[in-house]
Image (tube, rainbow, N blue to C red; front, side, top):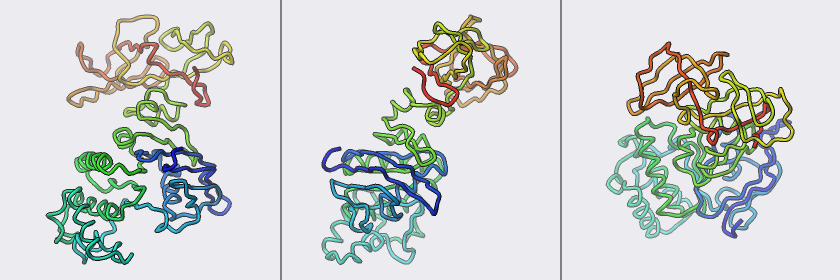
Length: 357
């Protein structure tokens, strides 16, 4: 870890006798944009609140810029947090909302004015300073909430699902705004979301969580193309990765409904007859003529999205697959087709979800 980064060492959290965060170890470099992502109940918001000082750490240590902040009050940690709810004061103007925290901290009036002016310019809300929150759109209110964090000049920004209350179009535009903000400010940012699209588009590093444990840490490309296990493979990506059950036949062959697939698995622990799972992303499946290592499927549903189509299919042995289909002969519901995935694009897992290589 760099001297100015953040480190979590053996961080645990229990509520009574129930442990919900299980010994998290994580290094976050200074200036990184890190996204905690995972399903509801995985512990991502609890972990963020421990970093913020809003939840007590049961065990372990949190260090920011080399300083142990585990037992410090939130105001002493050099952090600023943006919540899912905007939490703006409805009777105050935007200007007063932005400066209120600084006023309570007894910052001088001239300094408050300068910080509010700078933050409003960065967020392009300087023309809204005299309005009240009730006169703003959802996106504008979220900008004010972010601005209130900016004026504090924190070392670390913490975002707890900040876009959940916005409609789809606003979420896209606000993602762009937050990414731009990170480039301009250069601060460390930690962002919590259950939306893997937000994680993929915003993060330098993604931390995939499940049941209070880290499943994988990596760049968006790493967790998408080289998932550590079947949970990560299935969670990251939309539509999710296809998982086809197969039987290990030995000599690099896995037997599926479509016949024998030659693999590059080098797992010495596999024995003939062992079950393996073959992972294939929808965009890597192509429609081909009948061949030994293609999977014969029947098209159940055709989802047309303009630029692309998704074919929802069933194999001869009842396994579900989704294939992306862009160009080629017309395919309709009820048609029987053959799908093939290049060996380099396949990923293999055992029945417990561990990656086979």
